[in-house]
Image 1 (cartoon, rainbow, N blue to C red):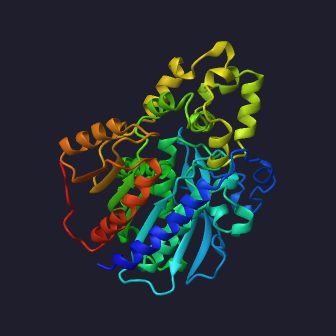
Image 2: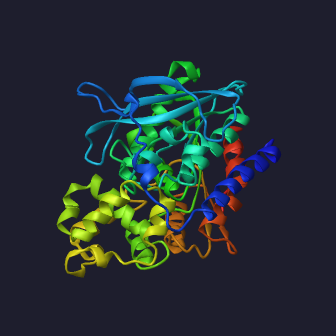
Length: 411
């Protein structure tokens, strides 16, 4: 396989991501993000979707990917397509699709779900990828991750689709919806004539880390019933947020408290029964407004070591609310069913953000169901470095699935 130079390319771009993250000032302002919303009509919801169906393309136009500031050997488009939200109502999602100038034959489609990790439209990949580095600054790590996927996938000759899987209302951590958006993005890519794919027969590989692994894993769970026609040959995912309630409890008051706060805002958009405004104080409502304009580097720095109880009426921990407990249960990995594809799952053994034992339990469940799961732990890594350590192997895993090789299993 040809993953030697690809390993170097992917590691190089990911290293850039890590350097950018490390250089982010702790007192990051939200001014730049708040003033640059994606006004392009591709992001505007249609007046009606009556009679439309998931995966249907509504709009498209060519775009130039500027995220690293130099020309690239592929063609790219933004496509608006039909998908579903958590209640099953139709909505219009957006994805970036990329065709290499020298594609491999037969066609293969890499569906890459970046760690968007934000409630803001300014951090969504289809917007971020079209912005030059001078505009992006350090803010959107998911954008840099998306470019790494484009550069890596197209250099292997694969067509790439990167969905804005949080939906039009940026509903971060709503895993069920993220899975639908991912699967419908694949359908739309396969229906998009300029990509010259072979429809539902196109072999598809899923990849994603952390927030991107949530969308990828839910897509794998949902595919057998929601999109059984798709030819998904495997998934390589890492840093899995299996149970969002467990992660929130772990993050509250710690370095990643801002992740909890932003996740609470995102999930409440997907599940109106949470009635988040009724739980928040005036300070909490201001926090909700501010965090809605931030990417992860900003809100992680702004709200580090704070507690959610400082923003709720009566110091309530939202995780004690029965409605929120039910929502978290409904959005826990494994609730839909068992994926019917081989998967590679990789984790830091002592991940400081997500809960590794939850991942081990999920993997054991899938193994018991007879699935081929390759589970890899990195004992010396943390949440960020596990992505760097696991990425070359994840790319090689997807290459092998496209090549039709037998899937390894550690079950």
